[in-house]
Image (cartoon, rainbow, N blue to C red; front, side):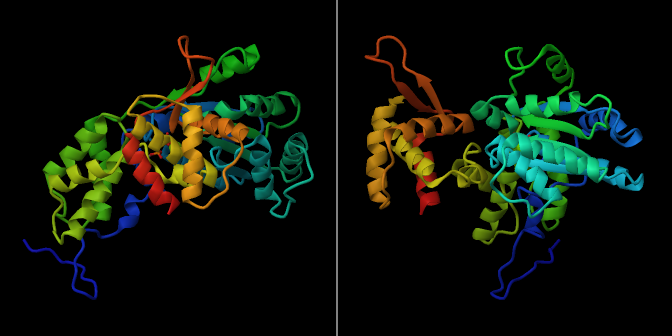
Length: 397
Ligand SMILES: Nc1ncnc2c1ncn2[C@@H]1O[C@H](COP(=O)(O)OP(=O)(O)OP(=O)(O)O)[C@@H](O)[C@H]1O
Ligand SMILES: [Mg+2]
């Protein structure tokens, strides 16, 4: 049966009805295979709307890449806020990406600024800002659900003080209303007794929700809803969907599955085909590496990008699993020259390496015995060096 094509002015057709349903930021109304998790959250945070002020909830959500941690939390927190509105409770939710807001101060500032948009950027200590947050909440009789996303990254860099300080904040005011509840999200959040006192630790450990990888069948359910919204009817073959689910189920990663779907569609459009055949997805798979997430790399400062490019080149040329930080530094100087940038000092480079390691982009470790002197070795976690090199060059250009 012929389909109704949407033709552009040049007479080209597209398999897409609406690409936006495949974009990174889109959170669907329905989240198949996360019903239990949504229910658990609703149950645990119920008191925020039944008896606001009585308890301060702390929750940790953990799980591998693309398992819906961010999407589920966004959906859940919106529902909770709506329920609060119906009951005339002044509940706010703030979703903070800790990869972008890199210090405790910046996180607190972001919170305070949602209530006081003109609050000056400088001039206060983190403790003062934190105190002011509580004062605003008290003064305006508000409650806050704070979501700290990508918290694992933050902790790797700055330690767990932020959780400690935020949880203590409510513990210290036993007779006043509990205004703040927290959800921390990460792939893996270290919960051990070196960082927390026994009672905080046991609260946190009791409230960990683990998101499992999606199976191939789960991915199929997730994709089929997107397909209905994003594509023209009949634009994708059953076999193609199966192939995507099989590829992505290795990682259990819905983001990767959606990306393959989108790229398959792009490929169909590029060659003027009205159906997405399995081969387009195979091609998409060869062109993408799920580790190379643009939204992660774009936020890196210029010199971190240059350094990363240098590491990729050095690893490619050396054809070994690890290279030393000294070798990378030399390559970095060459890269800086190539891009017409002044290279930075040695001490900075060590810091950036730690930073990239925390991002999970590179794998840094101390050299073992047998190596003369101790040095830092740099490898790549998953991405092939030449792919990373190409990706960084594109990003830098
Ligand atoms: N159950 C689901 N139903 C529909 N879409 C989903 C589901 N789970 C995840 N997705 C989609 O998959 C993509 C990745 O999900 P999400 O960003 O929530 O993963 P994550 O666990 O936060 O990953 P990361 O650890 O990389 O931050 C998003 O586009 C999201 O909308
Ligand atoms: Mg996420």
